[in-house]
Length: 232
Image (tube, rainbow, N blue to C red):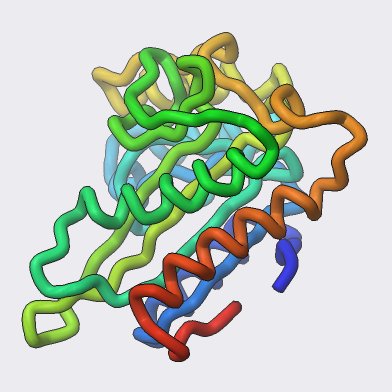
């Protein structure tokens, strides 16, 4: 499987949701051609959201809604998304899902001698304790959705968005306006983020890291599901 290219981020989000709905193990690596900012669906219920969305679209960053929580995430050619759909063992906790995908990313990066960690980064977009960081700067954010399968087990959609190249300058004022509208969220700053293009040799083909990400994710999915995994 290679990195799937969608025209819009909405198509990528919809594919993730469709895979989750099937209830079967799956992997999806994707990016979008057109820029967008993905925000939690709950934001659309706040007063003033329609005007905010119109303003973001005029600035070249239309808003796309997702079912999971968190903050605003820029999408487009400079973002690579890794999604895993997997049954979780009985007694598994949300932290286990985060360790699963962060571990896959860490393994892929180590193939290229890039050491990563996890943790919150103040003033990062969609900040959280399970950011993947390099040198204290945010490289990837993670999110999850779980639903019960019965017998004490759950199905998880585990997602990571990796910054492949630095976002355009135009995104930062829009991200700031979105998080100000949400209330209580620090406006993101570019300086606290790092991109794969800054960490890897310029001559390295993009497919090299993509292949490493898929292999690391497939190994973990195979461990949980056996031969039943499916590449999307």
